[in-house]
Image 1 (cartoon, rainbow, N blue to C red):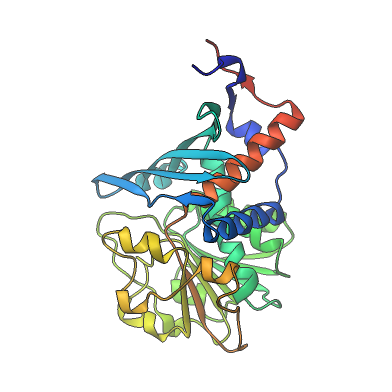
Image 2: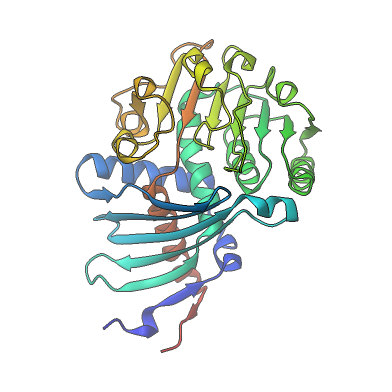
Length: 322
């Protein structure tokens, strides 16, 4: 039986206060992707249930030899929370020592989910977005938009932010955050106005009853990079083939999922191909490139390891009682 004295709990405040950077998270994710390619990381496809249209429950699992840990995440999503000014996601992660199979930490997973998603985006963006990108548009203005703004600001010389979202509270929070970072922020009433002319576009609209695709590839300018965090649900499927390149995060995982994010004939390159050098990044300044993904357990594992090891060094967290 595991020694309870070695099991620590890390709250969101604990996790958030550790000062992890986008560069650290990108490096760790890329390391685990290469380890997976070498057969030393196991990544299970996501498991999910949707009891009603706006509510989703999901779990992820990944195991690594180096560093020697296993992470299991449980997550819930309620899209209706956005209308009440609440986060749409609640989550916990349990980290296990791979050698003993004992749990060593239980931590808030909501911040990790936000940051690992932004880190996965950043891995792709640093290869596919133009390095001179200055304008970023957000379709969806919740926690994912805020975490992506932080991650992309570390990578690109951003100056202007455009915002289109359903919840006014979240729109106001994102605008205030952008302005607090010294950026020009524009609240848009029309998604076309937000997207047109933007260098980087991030769509992160959660599933909701009656949601129909409303975004078109034709609005995306030449040379732009698009992050479709929302499984492309907000983009018209008949327009997706207009992108010059489409990359997903994990072709093996996507083959296990139903329904798939995009038509099977559009699924080709994935993040593992990119990190291992089997495919190249942007090859033409005029390419319109889309990264479409549903999230990867490796990302949760990467962040959970960083959080746990940094927390041990800093003496952060509290031991759970026996």
